[in-house]
Amino acid sequence: MQNVTVDRPNLELSRVVREAYEGLSWNKARELCTSGRVKVNGQAVTDPATRVQPGDEVSFDRGAPRQRRGTLAPERIVHADGDVVVVEKPAGIMSVPFEDEKDTLIDITRAA
Image (cartoon, rainbow, N blue to C red; front, side, top):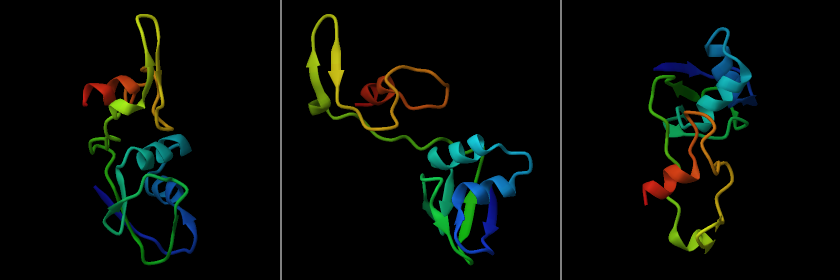
C-alpha cells in the first residue's frame, strides 16, 4: 500500500496515482481508480477524474483485490428466449469477457 498527501490544488486523482508510480501509464493509473483500489481520505473513489485538494490523503495498492460492482437485479432482464437475451445493464459492465480484470454481465449474474 502506498500513501500520498496531495500538495497541489485541483489535481486529477489519476494524475496523483501516476506520479506516485514511476513509469505507470495513464491507462493503468485510471484502471487502478476504476477498480476500487484507490482511496481518498479513507473512502474508495472510482472516478479517475475526481479532483483532489492539498491535504487530501490518497492511498492505493496495486495488489489489492478489485472492487466488485454488485449483482444484476432480475428485473433488468427485458427479454429472454432460446436465442437471445436483452438486458438493461449498467454502464461500464461489458456483455462478454474481454479482459481478465473487467466485470462482465456473466460475472454479476453468477453472483445473483
